[in-house]
Structures are given as structure tokens and as C-alpha cells.
Image (cartoon, rainbow over all chains, first blue to last red; front, side):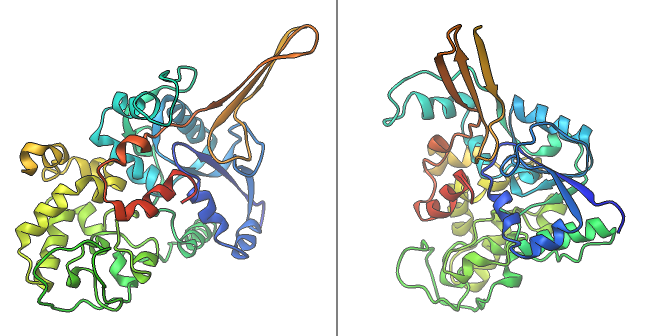
Length: 308
Length: 64
């Protein structure tokens, strides 16, 4: 192989879990580093400049004016930009902030907070934007890699296929594909929460009346949560059918499946998902893919009048 | 000579930060400020979410 490709990493508003996701490659990381030179990675190196690179990997969402500036500097410096992780692709967990104004978020942290002694909102830091936004609201993105973080196997396949100029062999299944639980028909008549009572570890959450969003979520994780008893909460973003078909919607898809497996009426399930929308839609709420669907009415669902 | 040392960004930490250190004519530090550049609002938007999802959700504050 000729010269090594240069890989530059930048983070915007995120948690650095995606950088840890890369470390999850363990010894396979050596195979990647044999083919790339890491030229910038703030969590690991002291390179402060936006040095020219072949591949620019951006984690985190656009939340501040500083994020906008960094995104544009990366786009200028890098030939290929990867939106790496659910934050740059769909906005990530901070998308739940969509249920509030930016002023409410700031006041909640700095003013109306029992553990904060001052009531000053910091003013010498980057300005917060009105909302949380995915990366492609600012710059052109070449490759989208959702996942919170993406599983190491997918990261490895994506990077190696990119370096070698071939199509990545990455499936477009939903989370159920890698989940071991069996969907079976039951006589369950009520929705229950994951912590209530004893659940069968071998049976699908939906069959047991517990909301799980794996069937409407893209598998970029290998289903670790349902394997250890935690229902899927869609951190990888919507499944392909929901992305591609405007009339498809997480709540109706999940409700339809759950109603089919149990004796719970579909409309009750839809109502429950709407009431808990802030939880269930958080990770992708910042993305127009979700938010601009005609069936997504978060503010209506979460106001007390409608909920009553 | 009075001067300011500015480290922007601070690297090899988790998150975005800036450090500014003011030094006076006698080479004494007169002021030092550590600025955290990141804000997402977890304190507020987590209110009203399902409690059983908090272990997985709060993990996303820092490092999954």
C-alpha cells in the first residue's frame, strides 16, 4: 500500500462515547492504524489545528456556534466526512431538548437548580443555538454512521471498506435481527413497565406488554440491551423503512406489532407511546427525518390538556 | 510583562474546555479561568422521562 490515509477526528456536542467506540476495536485497532495515520483526535492528541486529511470523522451534534465553525473547518480540511454516531446523524439524546426552549434548558442548569449556588448564566462560552441539529444541517456529509456508539464490528467494516474502496458489508436490519428473544402470541392485556414484575428473558418484550423499540430501530449495536433485559430505546435511530417511507412512524409500527402479539388494543399502545414520547423519540428528535413527519406531534402529546 | 496564557482547546480530556491564565509584570498568576464550552441541558430535558431508562440515558452525558 502506498501512503497511509490520513484520519482526522473532531467532536462537536456529544459525550465522547463514539471515541470510546473506536477503542472498542481493541487489537483490531492496530489493523486500522496499519492503514491510517491519525492526524487529529482531541481526546488523544494535542493537535489543535484542522489539518488536511483524507477522512474526517465527526462525532456529536450541532448545538453551539462553535460546533458550526468546527464543522465547516473539518469540511474544508477533509476529503470525505463521516457523520459518526447518532448525534451527528440524527441529533442524539440531546434532541430531547426539543421539548424545551434553549432558555429553559439554560435556566434549568444555572438558575433553577438546587445544587447550583449562583444564578449566572455563563457568557464567555460559545452561544447556544435555538435547537439541537444534525451535522448535515450545516455541512455536506458523505457517509452516515448512526449508532450510540456504533458497534466495533460495524466501525471496523466501515473504515476498512472505505480505505479499500469497496462497498461495506453492513446489514440494514432492525435490532430484532440480533436479539435472541422469541416473538410469541400471549394473553397479556395491559402495558407494563420493564421494572414491574418478573419478565421472561427468552420472550420478546412486546409479547410481555413492555414497550421495546427494537423493531423500529436500525441495528448498529448487535442488540446488547434486550440481551440483558433492557428494552430497546432507539439509540441507533430509526430503521430503514421508517427513514424511507414518510407515512411510516415509530409509534404506529411498534403499536401494530405489540397489538398483534398481545391482547392490548392498538390505540392504547399508541396513546402510551405518545405520553412517553420525550423518552422514546429523544435520540432522533433533532432530525427532520423524524420531527417533520406529519404524524409527529410531540408538543401536542406532552401538553397536559391532550394527555388527559 | 503582563501576559495571558491561553490553552484552547484543552486536549486529551473528555469534552471541550479552554484555560486562560493571566500573569502580571512580576510573573505572578493573577487570575486563572477554566471554561467549559459544552452545554446540552440534560438537567432539564431528563425531567419527565421514564426512570427505568435513566441508567442508559445518563450514561450519554459522558462516554456512553
